[in-house]
Image: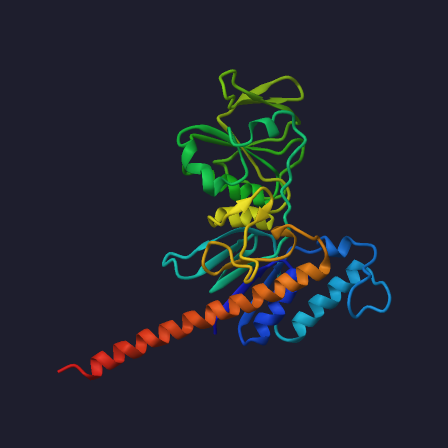
Length: 312
């Protein structure tokens, strides 16, 4: 049976999963645990709630409803989205393994953490990047670093290793949360600033540590926390604008066939009602996309049989 992979277990992701599952597809939802909704103290002014409920309660009820109709819930951090070797199926990579599916819905919020490190914002696009898969090619045989200490940072660093001459993992005072391979150089010292070269426009030249030492760099990749929908969309070549994934408002489709986005990551009103609506649209659109592909495949097979049967 065809499968849809939904990244995010909040109102947008669960609404998408409900509609796709009711349409007869297998659905897997990836959730990394407590999200923005679960942190909300109270939810009110929402249809069907006569009194305010906690965000945690509403989140739990949403997950329970999805489980009841057969949605598969996987609690794992998603670190990447790509395609298989045949470029016919999506592959979602997590810290716990990989899953493949016929369509993907991004509903993991829009978290893009910009560190308060002097020099980072000034050098964005000039050596500071938020997507290793996108930009690794430009750093062939150069020295780069990834800022972060978790599974997402490790995934970004591993994408750089085949291209760069040297890759550092800068944890800014934290111990790595994951096992780091020997090919990756870990520096746990606190950071003070990111320095640019004196040419115009300035590019990343070095990172300075709190003790005054410096490390020469050609590029710095930011991978703090976990990957949000915008990060994952960018890896797939989907169009993004700032911290927003660009979608067709009628279908929630990105410019990548089979890839949809819903909820906070599309911008606009950051409310449960908007996220649920967009999730429903994304789920129905992904369902139609998968069914249309199945019909097209059956049509091709039918035509092939007809030519065979009619052959002399």
